[in-house]
Amino acid sequence: MRGLRVAVTGASGFCGSVVARAAARAGADVITLGRRPGPVGEHRYWDATTAAPDLTGADVVLHLAAAVGDPPPGRATTFHAVNVDGTARLLAATGRRPLVWVSSASVYTAGAGPIREDHPVGGLTAYGKTKAAGERLARDAGAVILRPRAVYGAGDPHLLPRLRRAVRGGRVLMPGPDIPLSLTAVENLADACLAASGWPPGAYNIADAEPYRRDTVVAAACGVPVRHVPLPLARVAAAVATEISRLTRRPPALSRYGLEQLTVPVVLDITRARGQGWMPRRTFADYLADNPPSAP
Image (spheres, helix red, strand yellow):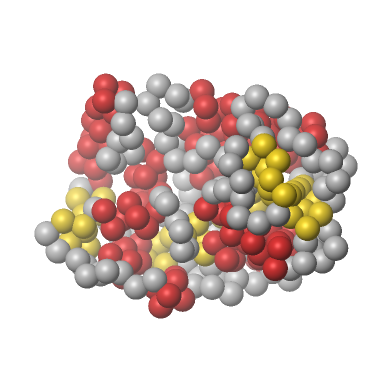
């Protein structure tokens, strides 16, 4: 990275801000693109739903801007506008520059066993489906595509805060049964982003070195034991919460995206990324050591 001008989209967000800081520490001259300034470097305004970004002078592009989670009530088209149309605008501006396009393991259809990059892609939620559609554009343009799973770390606004808000009566309710799953420390994703501009084009799974047991992670993150709710009941609750959100115009307490993250046993095979010399250095235990759960 030293001496390069690196453009980071979505640098005001959780993952993008970590990547932008990592690029600056590695000696890059950072350009952040998005509606809000990033933590370092030169900021250039970009609304992915309306225009192409200004990449003048950039040597490498790291694309992390995305609409994540579940569509806000009444705004489902936003996900397509950002994750698909925004990708098309970015690709038009990128030209022949190296591009690292950060996707998600949510693009995979359900499957057993460690999932390799040739596993069928389509997505189970609006987020996964639009990321899969954006991926196809990026792949056709020769980008390096990274597929992390459930990114966590300091400053995470989604995964761990939602789990900790679910603590009730000294326990946390999880849609059962317990499952194995891959998680991705944001530092491991940032390392991959910085290295991947030199990798051969194509998709790469990015996750911590070993998979985890969901209930073990949740109990450790929340500081309380896990109790199971029958999965059919959780699905009904998510559907009801989604319908209520359409009336209240507020995000559902239990969403289809959240249910997918907690109930689909996605374990990623990271052999392909390891073959490029990338090694995941952080674990969930490292995160907990730095960010212990508060007393329930």
